[in-house]
View 1 (cartoon, rainbow, N blue to C red):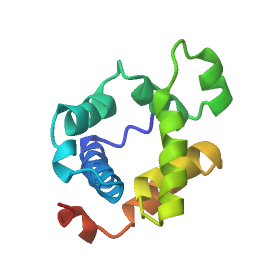
View 2: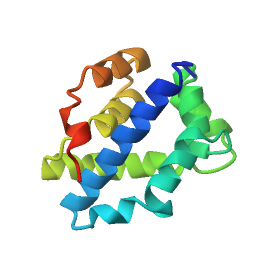
View 3: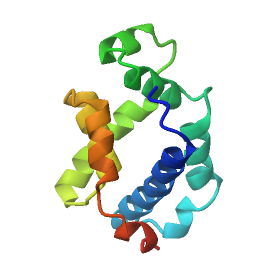
Length: 133
């Protein structure tokens, strides 16, 4: 939707994997659980495929389409929306810092501007990116 390029996409995938591992580990999962096809494999497919419901949702939202219009015109359930609500709630309860999750939640459910949200995310400290396993 914003055509921000492959570098941003790669950064979000990398940070997304870090968040998945951080959250999963805090819930008792092994970090290795996220390094196979059900973890990083699914993340890459979901984040890069135009056939992905979540990818399509994000593209439409970033292009400025209202949330309710996207929901009303989607043929299939966008499962990431429910997952986002659950993960956000658990992260708040357990005091787990998940900047991508927080950014998405604010943009989708609190109506924050997408470009401002991405700018905030890009300014988030990168040190945790290299020390998560």
